[in-house]
Length: 347
Length: 234
Image (cartoon, rainbow over all chains, first blue to last red; front, side, top):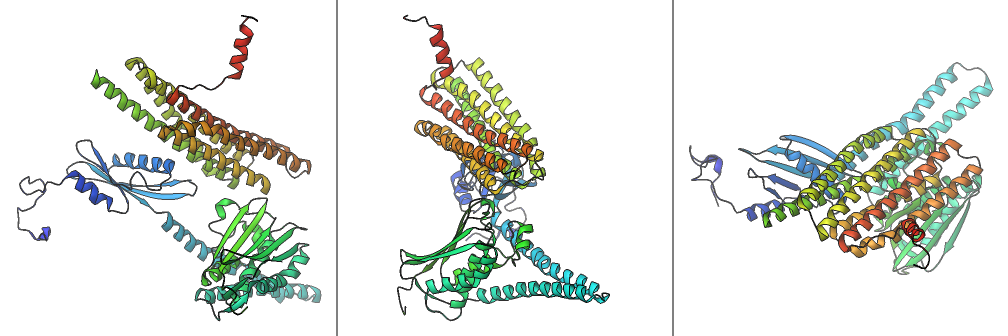
C-alpha cells in the first residue's frame, strides 16, 4: 500500500516534479472514471477529451443525452461554475453540471442526475405547505364565523353560523382522522385474515352509495372468480372505498362507475373505472402523494381531504400489492389494485 | 489528397452531430410547448420563444458550413447526398421549432380561458405522437436506418387521425356553446401546428432515405405538371 502522500517529506511528490510524478495509462484513468456513478468529462491540455461511460449516456434517452452532453461540453469552457438544466423528457429530469479548472491546465465537468432529489424536496415542501393550508382554511373559517357569532342576536343567523362552524370542524376532524389513519397504515397492516375481496368491494361500494345517489352517479359491481386474499379487512375496505369515492366525485352528473373484482395470474385484481374528467399524464406520478391536488379549486369544492390516494397506496403496499392508474383527460380514469391471491385458504 | 478527405469527413461528422443536437432541441421543444399551452405558463412561453433564436442561429450555421464544404470539397455520391440532406433536414428542424413557438404564442392568446378536458387529452396525445415521430426520425438519421426512416410516413397517419378527431370534438363542443369562437380558432390552429410538426418529421425521414439510398419521394404536383408538358402520344 502506498504511503499517505500528505505526510511525505519536503520536496517529495510535488506536482510538476517529473521524476516523482507517476505516469498513468489513459485507459486506466478512463476505467477508473467509469467506476464513478456520475458523468465525468475531462478536457486535457492537449485538446483531447476523456469521458466516462455515463457522461454520454446519462438517461438512455438519446435526445436528452445529446442535450446534457452538449451542456457539459459548453460547461468545460466556463471554468469554475455550476449550471442546472431541466429537460422536459418526458419524464422531466433535472441535472446539475459542475465544472472546475485543473492545474496547470485543462478542465473537468461532473454531470449529476438530481431528479430524484428534486422530487423528494418537492414532495416535502408541498406536504408542509399543503398541510398548513388544509388545516388553516377551516381554522380561519371557524375563527371568522365565531367572531360573527359573538355579536349576532338574530336566532336564524346564529343557527346558520353555528351550522357552518360545525361543518368546518367536521372538515378539520376528517383531515386529522385521515392523517391518523395514514400514520397507522404506515406502520403496517393489523390482523391479517383470509378475505373474499368481493365482500370487501361490496362493503366499500355500500359506503359510497349515498354520495353516488346524491350525485346521480350509478355504481355497478361485477365479480368473477374466487377472489380470496390474506388481508386487513378495515384497511382494504378503506382503500377501495377511497377509490370509489374519487370515481364518484370526479364523474359527471348522471355518469357511471364500474367496479370489478376478478382473478388473474394468481392475483386478485380490483378495478375502479369512471368516465369523468380524467387526470393529465403529467400528474399521474404525483397523485399518490399526500395532499397533492390535480385541480386545487375543484378538489376543495368536492370536499376531499387530499389523503385518499395516499391511504390507498400505503394499504396496497402493506398487502404486497400494486396500484396503477390509467387515465386520459376528458375520458375518465381507471385505478387498478392488484393483490396476491391467497388461493382460497379459508374462503 | 487523403488528408483533405479526412478533414472533410471530420467536418461531415461534426455537421451530423450538430443536426442531432438541433433535432434534440426540437424533440425537447414539443412537450415544453404543450406544457405551456395546458398550464398557461407564460414564463415558459417566453423561454421557448427566446430559445428559438439559438435554434435559428444553429440552423444558419449548419447551412453555411454545408455551403462551404460544397464549394471547397466538391463532394460526390453519398458525401454530396449527405450535405444536401443535412441542408434540407436543418431547414425542417428549424421550421418545426418555429411551430413549437407558434403553439406558445397561441397559448398566450388564449391565456385564462379553460380548455375542455377532452381537447386537453387530445392535445397531449398529439404532442406525444409528434414527439415520437421526431424521436424515430432522428434515430433513423443517427443510426443510418433506411427501413426505419421508411416506416415513419405510416406512423404519421395516426397523428393525422388525431388531428381530425380533435377538430370534430371541437365542433361538437362549439355547437354546445361550451367554447368561445376565438379560443376554438386558436386551438384549431394549434392542432394544425402539431400535425405540421409530424409532416416535418416525415420530411426528415425522407431526406434520411435519400442520403442513405438515393431514393426520392414522389412529388405528385410536379409529376402532373410534367405530364401536362408532355404532348399526348409522345
